[in-house]
Amino acid sequence: MENISRSKEEIEEIVTMIRLNLYNHGLHCGPKEIRKKMDEYDEKPLPSERTISLILARQGLTHQRTGHYPGDS
Image 1 (cartoon, rainbow, N blue to C red):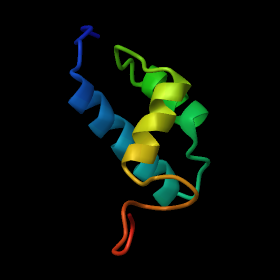
Image 2 (cartoon, helix red, strand yellow):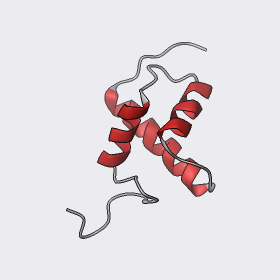
Image 3 (cartoon, helix red, strand yellow):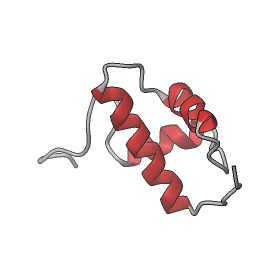
């Protein structure tokens, strides 16, 4: 498979899509699992678990949430 360098925005979108997919299938959807799934898909560059955690927090995808809700500050 051809290695394609992705932009930060593309990486964030991929992390978000994988997180929601795992969540919707009732699977563990933390940074470690997301990173493993990205590695399986041969995504490069592969972000660290910390970076994935920051992306999830920025997107409101922590603590069983599926995004930002009305009233969030």
